[in-house]
Length: 264
Image (cartoon, rainbow, N blue to C red; front, side, top):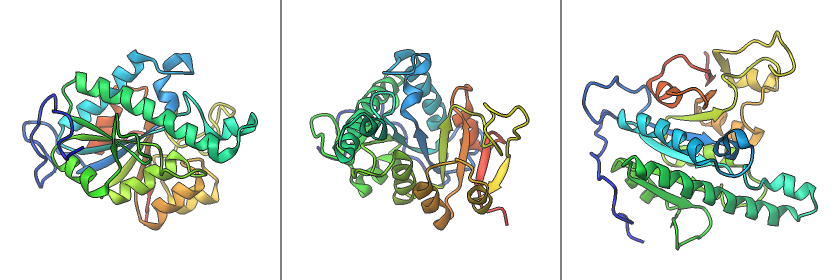
């Protein structure tokens, strides 16, 4: 498949050096971001599988952020279909289970691509394992070029290696594609000092340092992914995907959720 791939629903203006596509939209805080979507986000209230209405809403959120002029890459999980660690617990060999989980992320990526293209957002899917009939292989320079041309790049199949989570894939891909932040879309509105579902007095953080997050064992991302972000000074914004407009707010730098990064 060549750089252009299938024809774009609309070519869209390439992002200029200021990170803005023009118009009266507010200036984004970040010129290029990586959005991490869990597989569970695709299931909606059903808790399993793909809910088309929910995926359509996620696509609309991404489209709104994209139209501000920011470069957007997306890493998707697959837990709504199959989670490697859970399958291992049911007797499946771990590496085999992880590979099956990678294929689940490809299914989610194709569903998201379909919804984005219905909104006239030019999109490419790249995978860490070859699935050449439906997606490009992950090639770093090609992915960067797609983003420069104003396309949303959806990255599936994690890192392509078992034993690594899609959180780790998100951290690695963000660095490879020169993203300025990881936007971690979750089912909670912030990082809390303790589990808000168990403790009524749990307090949300507006900002928290990498060091404090580790010391307090705050579950921002898995430890490997978090270490990659910390070592490379890559900020993480944690926010609730269920609130309309939150991806765009995160891109614009509005005070939503929790910002994890250097505080000194």
